[in-house]
Length: 94
Image 1 (cartoon, rainbow, N blue to C red):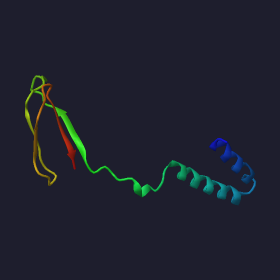
Image 2: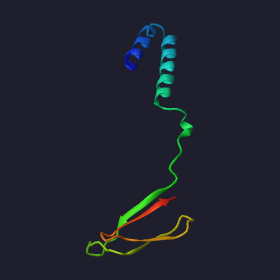
Image 3: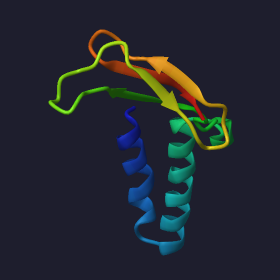
Image 4: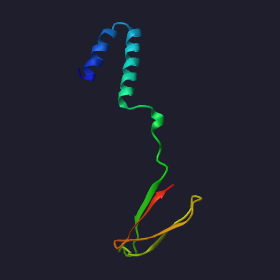
């Protein structure tokens, strides 16, 4: 039986009594939350990201082999070099 039909089957008799309706809604919410996944504390937040950009000159042309520095945020300074198309990336940035 499809979950929506099951929910409808449970809620229809409860519509006559507000107390039964509230109980049916609570049970439905628990079932839906259980079906969506387990414990929400199991999800770990992302603690690092990345920085990506393109080095260009005043005319808008990309600059190959440019040295790019990433500083600040109480972290050690990092450097990288842009590629042939001027793109640089810093991975695992806290």
